[in-house]
Image (cartoon, rainbow, N blue to C red; front, side):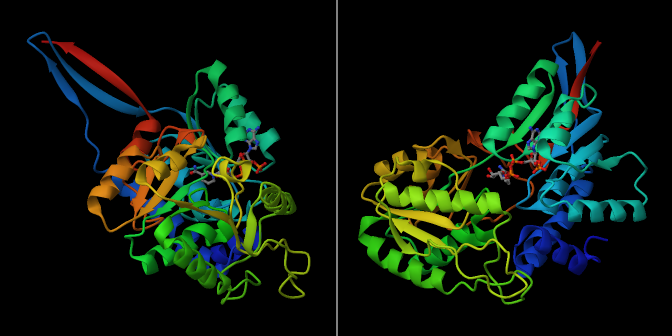
Length: 407
Ligand code: NAP
């Protein structure tokens, strides 16, 4: 039914978020359908554990639903991320109280119509609307909601953790990122540049996995920067509802102001704006009051400055040269976040070495945003606690109970 309603959902997602129609049509909505399909079959392929204790006893472990799961998700990938939680929660037998961001509630509402038509029993999926500090906080504080799966900013994640701790809730936190994107001189530079333009600016840089800190080995630095800027300047900004648009609008005024603040800060910190940097004229009359900001490339900043440490969550990247593998590993890890990273190299030994030492929950080598729904997904350090995806999600939403029977 999600696939049947692809165009309706695509349009709603684009209008709510400002993302280009083409992105919602090819990424957000198909992924929402895949989330349900994936977990519907995942539960057919799980195993139960059994342990024999010498000649004393026989143990078996059952995993039972935990009860009511509270699911809170952000505005950047609305239906994609909410369904990523709803599908495993209900597949293993919980009921769900799901809260989309109040900034982008439309596709969650439309999903309700779909699940009614699909005759999901009443009460299994309950979508509640309202602002985070009211409705989200009420979910995390409610004593009967014993499982909380949250995706959003790190500061909000801390509030969620604080609300849940005294009630001993099981919590999964998927939080912010400041992801390194490392390009070695031995990489296939065409692929690295194309991949980096995508990882920098997809969804106007408003994907938690976007690579906002680009590090390039010095011998390839100049060529990379020139080509990267050239390719980025070809991205077509425009009305999100225009089929040709590749860069749409920022989600709201607060986010736009935050982006402008960081671009100003970067200049104060000694950065040089190589591309973008100022809000453009809106693309047409319909978008007159829209929040647009162009892809922005900044060079010349020290690795440890605020611009390079704090999450901007917009179409802004910094590019920094490095000389040695050791040095770039230290740069990559010199950050409170640890969500994802990309490494571009044709040297397989180096790829393994660097992947082992970077402190991020996902390391992509010669690619970005290739997602297999079976793999563990989540962040280290301030990027989160716990993992989603595949077996990890099935385990999160269930309670293991060991039954021990004397022989
Ligand atoms: P946010 O402000 O933290 O909001 C996330 C969700 O939490 C929204 O539904 C929000 O509701 C709700 N909320 C706000 N205050 C709350 C509270 N006190 N208690 C409970 N819920 C509350 O984050 P955002 O600005 O929407 O999203 C951007 C952030 O999400 C970025 O940091 C990004 O990196 C991160 N993110 C992480 C992942 C990941 O998988 N790790 C994926 C996507 C995004 P309202 O919006 O209705 O107020």
